[in-house]
Image (cartoon, rainbow, N blue to C red):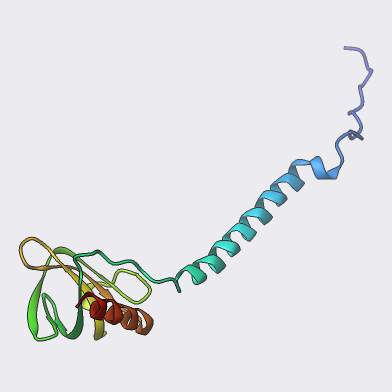
Length: 136
């Protein structure tokens, strides 16, 4: 080897800061933050939309709940295997955490057990009662 050292190359003047790896990754992070923020704002708006219930679901008033028995209107019904209970925000509620009572839509399975229960918001209850009156 000779004693000649080759200096490191100077920074490239053709790649300004906006094309650097740090800036591009910062753009991706900011995009991700704004994307998540926009989803959270849009989900609060979509939560206010009315839910569509199955045609074969029935309107009722949940009077009492003692797992696995449910009293809707004047009937005592049983929850079927794998039944779902959804709250006002359409989130699944475990039967052991079910403390609410009020207007519901419910769907029966082929064995006569309850398959799904949806707890209704006041607006949904009003709309569903109006639909029931129109059917009769």
